[in-house]
Amino acid sequence: MSSPDSAEHPNSELPVAPSGLGHEFADLPLLHVALTHRSWCAEHTGASNERLEFLGDAVLGMLVAERTYVQRPDLPEGQLAKIRASVVSSPALAEAARALGLGASLRLGRGEVSDGGEDKESILADALEAVIGAVYLDAGLDAARDLVDRLFAESLDRSAADPGEHDYKTRLQELVARNSTTPPRYVLTEDGPDHDKRFHATVEVAGRAHGPAVGTSKKRAEQAAARLACRSLEPVAVPVGAGASAAPAPRPQTPQESP
Image (cartoon, rainbow, N blue to C red; front, side):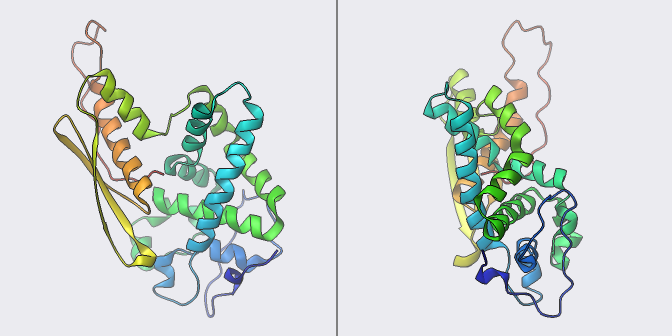
């Protein structure tokens, strides 16, 4: 299976496949595109991995849903949806990308290189989705399924034991409900051209704003803001009489992206 995105970049240093990928590409330029961030394209010519990311996001979501549906016939739809959301979240994707050694294989622009882009959560998550899309185009659904199973089996098992682990909007909603405060309120802004939108989300809980956090979609930006709020609020949600003399200090907030 081939793709128009496999057109090679002229006069460029080609990236090397991550050692843990476990897939031999027949259409090697597809892999090169999957490993090419838009910041690199701004300084050169050719296609970024954004189209492959779009495809890989859909392939990953379907395969995770399929695996969860087959392996957990005991769970209702709502629990299955939480498991899928946790596995396809940016933190889970970035974790898998780091285990794969993906960051060292990425083509990044000079600014992203100097800013540590090879370990940024959003860049790693998007690139891994692009690689999954590339594997699907290169060898079909079974090859993509093998890759997803290898990368996410452990994460799926953890999520099945604790559905919603990385669904931070749900976690925040439940945390707020337990403390009988006003429901979270999300404030969204966006910037950038239509082909490269960036969304900025802040979530307000009990009069305090958490964020802003940045995402490539409204959903990811809101999840990222909810994650910041959870990390800040959960340490202080200690029940009275739990034996703690003082609540731990909130963790520092850093804007990271989640789906």
